[in-house]
Length: 175
Image 1 (tube, rainbow, N blue to C red):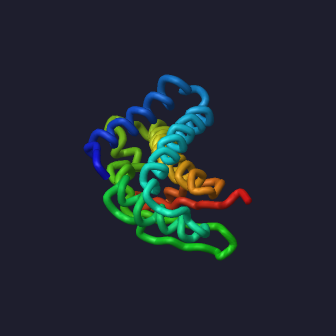
Image 2: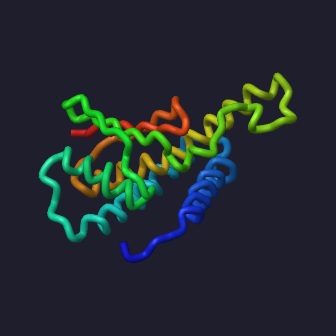
Image 3: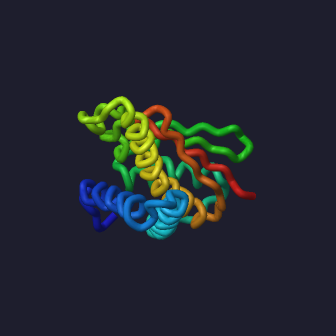
């Protein structure tokens, strides 16, 4: 596209957004923070897909739209394609990114989080790291949901982070 933004700037903005919504705005209500982060991602994904498909004809089926997300949309955002696309042939798609950039520096090991942690603290630190990591995934889930909604596919999108830094996104149509 015509204008680009530095990857480190985008990374910083996303990290700060998650920190602000989780730590300051909705510290006591993580479900509200998650909803707001996902809504911001939805709006951004909706607008970006509008921009990236401006010169293209409308997609004729769901698979074409999903392939667009995996190849073109993801490449514009992360400079790489989705690593794996799976489907159950009933409308559910799993998009897998084996080296998701926003999770490459995240550790769920509490010892890495704080070298001063005692045994009693380490469980809560691990839970905190897992919660922060899951909060990071609401934005890209929103990106995908916004893009697909703009392409005429209302859906639900969720993420699985059980194998860091790999990340899977499940797309399930709402029809």
